[in-house]
Amino acid sequence: MKLITSEEVQLGLYREEHLEIINRFELPENQAKFTALPKEIVAVSNGQYRVVILSKDVPVGFFLLHSTKRVSEYTVNPHAMLLTALSIDYKHQGKGYAKQAMLALKAFITTHFPECNEVVLAVNHKNIPAQQLYLKVGFVDTGERKIGKIGEQFILKLEIK
Image (tube, rainbow, N blue to C red; front, side, top):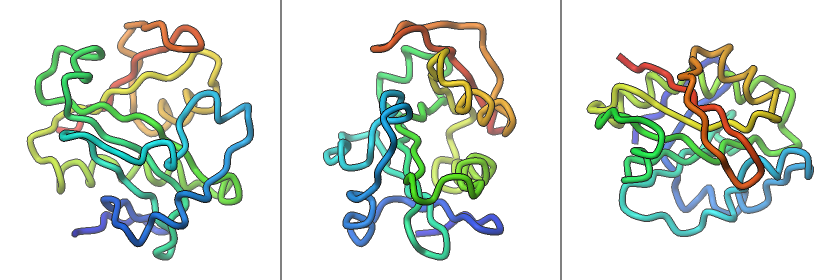
């Protein structure tokens, strides 16, 4: 498995050795309502890929990439992937890990999923910190909207190639 590295952060596909640490991730309620903790994503189906955000080989964050039919709910691009469930363990927040991970995303996608040319995601209209993060690292608002479990979501995309 090839790790994609920035100064502080590496992105890697989930391995069993990560399980114990990511199962202990915690988020305050005001963040937890917008995402899923890794321990809530135990089973993945074909076309779902768990990605671990590592700092010095220690898991500090997590997200899920999809190349399933669910992607078509967000884009008509047949070469797109959907990003969901991004979280940084609460004790590791404020260190720039989420930003570094999202900046490393293009290289990670190019390495592991060379057929993918776009990543899409939905971010809740009330989740201002996440919106700012995604826009800062190059995602753009598609203008599309979706109603999620807790209200309106903006659909954002990041072109890979």
